[in-house]
Length: 183
Image 1 (cartoon, rainbow, N blue to C red):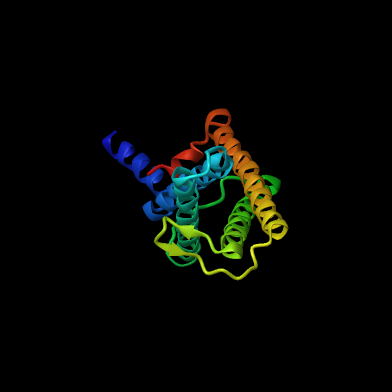
Image 2 (cartoon, rainbow, N blue to C red):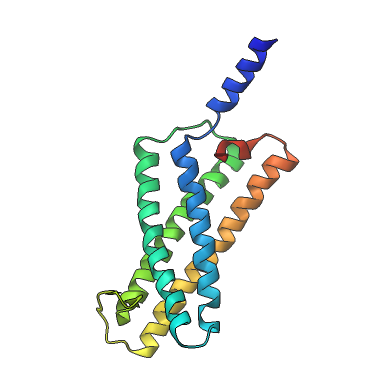
């Protein structure tokens, strides 16, 4: 009986992503949530040091997210554990497309954010200024900011569908899919 329990535990461990992949996933989730919340609430704060600190935090977390995304892609391509697909057929294709969409959208949000911050040369915590490449024209800045926001909102929608699908696997189909991403 003890051998059967050990075999079961070994099987579950083998069906998990490696710890680095799992941590990079959940760090990305936390960063995206924090960035989206700051992005939605930053302009609600009255002008002054608190608003400046919020947007500085947004820029720093955005750059950290860029680093985490590059690290995730490199790790997955070279070192991460590859697991068998959880689904087959159409669901496999949908899952694959969703994952690619998440990576592409996150990359687009980061690029648009860097362009947005660079267009006017944002000052970060009064310590460092993002290199300015634009004239600071309000209409152009607004347009860049709109693209950044639309990409972020689309990312949020796709991430919500991704999360709902994972919860469906776990609670409806009870296939323990979420266990793959448990730290």
